[in-house]
Length: 344
Image (tube, rainbow, N blue to C red; front, top):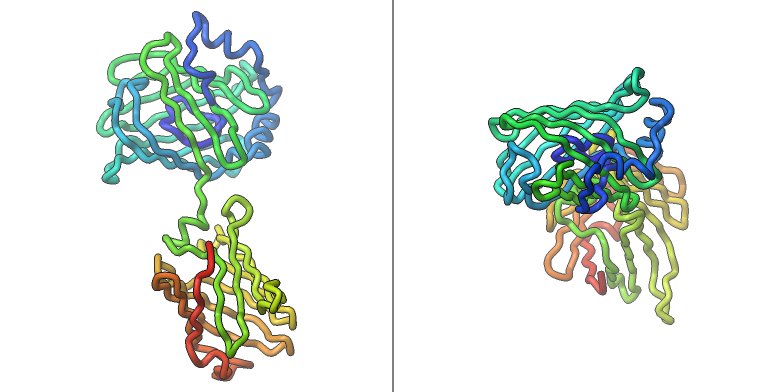
């Protein structure tokens, strides 16, 4: 679910509108081809297995579908959707800020099981600037790709019915549409993207590209590419042969460790060296990684590699190197290594 100006959004990213077509009885029309979960466990499995939990973001322009938030404001939205510890509630917290970072709206949403009606119900509340709002409703139905909720919202001295549909448009994308049940006002449509923690953590540093380093007449090449929908970076390194092919001598993968909130790397060479890397500092033009591991003989080693970027040149320096607990910097690591970018 991605929190979206939720007032009615509720079930984790799964509500999408059916477009902007309005019919005489929208709730009945939308529910005709949808089913309802037989139990809370069925609904919770739908949310978890469908990939609806997590951190989601969106941006756009507000409409007048809500009474308390003016139309025409450019916003950035972020929401956290989670299953509580008991596993009996889906909880979403969210914020909307304008282009200057000023808070426009904030709130929270809870979805639980109503045993009496046998359907998920939700309640939301929050503030649009200095005006409070509240919303409650129940599920109309769902299928493999979307969830629909109908709700009644009160805000700005007015009460109205909203129809919220969330559609799964991809592994890491969702679309949500909120519309007035009576067809008045302009529907609010949001395109959500799952927050990419790795890209954010790189802070503008581009880890990709093919980089070549001249090492006494031998060309050493490092190729790094995004993978898994930009959730990791894979690296292949080796010596370029006369025919242009690569004699691979090492492979690595970088990803974002959500528990430690840090970028990590695993690196292994053809001779058996195995290293664990952890980013210490990163900016658009500077990248510092701490490495710990063993060489091919099983001797413990540690080093810090700092890379700086200037145009199409990347300079890497080694520092704080130790072998078997003793300070030692091999000859090949004593001078900075300069690599030239061949292609992204």
